[in-house]
Length: 350
Image (cartoon, rainbow, N blue to C red; front, side):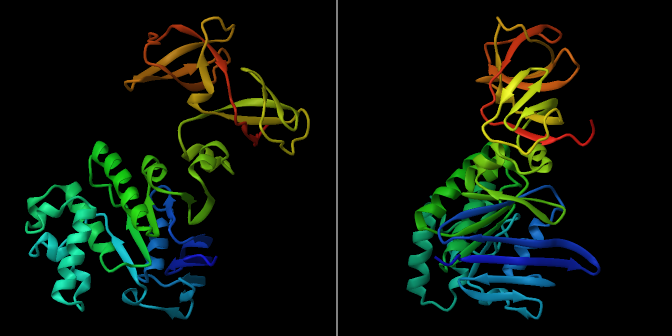
């Protein structure tokens, strides 16, 4: 099956400054993908290039089998059959909600525009607000209107540029799940750009982690968290700390927390120094354990407690315990390691 969106060796530059470097990935029809990374990593430039707002200096972008961008080719945005959802919603304040939704259907008949708008508003749960104006509804509702407007012309691909960043945390979480359900119910293909990991994990089937204009890893959320390809992905995704270890065999490492057997083999030289990434869920409370750690910080999150712990060697790790394990700062707690996924990299120095 040919991908709906295909990027091959794409480069983007402003003046003499390279912003995106040798970027390649594809999205299949019906999938939701995400470009995730810190500010300035090139993800929004990539989205704008796919939309046709920016030209590319090398490579190729194909949409639905047709080349739409190349060094000497730039198909305009209005001819790419795309929908866009922006960070600031970009609704027209002088138009009603219904008129906003059917704005992209100006060539259709009045009855067609009305029926499509009604269908889209019902899909996003806002049919009762059809005659209101944008200032009369909440930010979360405005974002759903923006999504309905983007979907109304039935585009082959919807692009979402930091669509939830102006919303509060609870609403952002809820709306991201709602948007995923809406897109999946229509079988709509989408590409989301965000710096928010929770948002990416909640919405996307495939995630591309970007840094300094380069794609670091294109994978499922599970693999990006548990099987990061490099140190940047390991550090950027989730919580975690590295501790030093010594390779005993391709899948065995001796550390200050004991010997860890990995779930995969590495190409290590025996006795070579390695750094092991430990996630908070790799460390469990164990009152009977000989390994004791000092509580430096604690954060109550409701069902769980996040502790920052100091090992006897001085190394720092974090651990998530059930919230009834309320240990005071400065006390010693027994812990044990249960790491199902060995994430390790050769140490840069001995």
